[in-house]
Image (cartoon, rainbow, N blue to C red; front, side, top):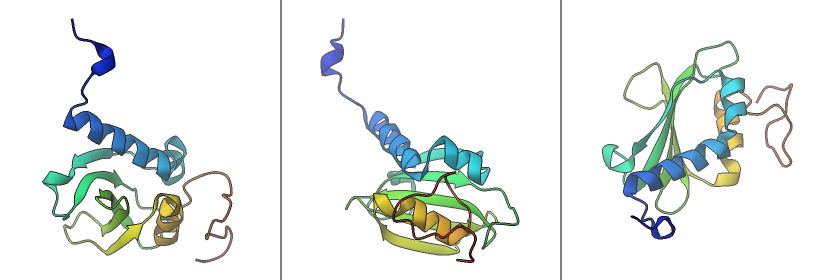
Length: 136
């Protein structure tokens, strides 16, 4: 019988933990509710074109009036230097509309909100760069 205290996490278990933490940094269930996102999955960095990517969270965003740039797909990639690289796509084309590198964990929600115009939580965050009710 295997000792559960010395369980060696496999590579994919670690990727799942990273992806879950990334999802929580975006806002978790409130993020899904506020943006209308439905298809959320993660991909190993080995399967992407990113150099130095560990894991990527891929999110489909439905089109709506409030979506500033009509972005339909969003990739959030955890890089080896513990920052995130965001890639925003219009439609389902393979070429990203915008790439933002060097995003830290405390800037994740603000960066997403500034780029898409969609709020990710129902409450105002301290030190948020997004002002509700004004064009950003």
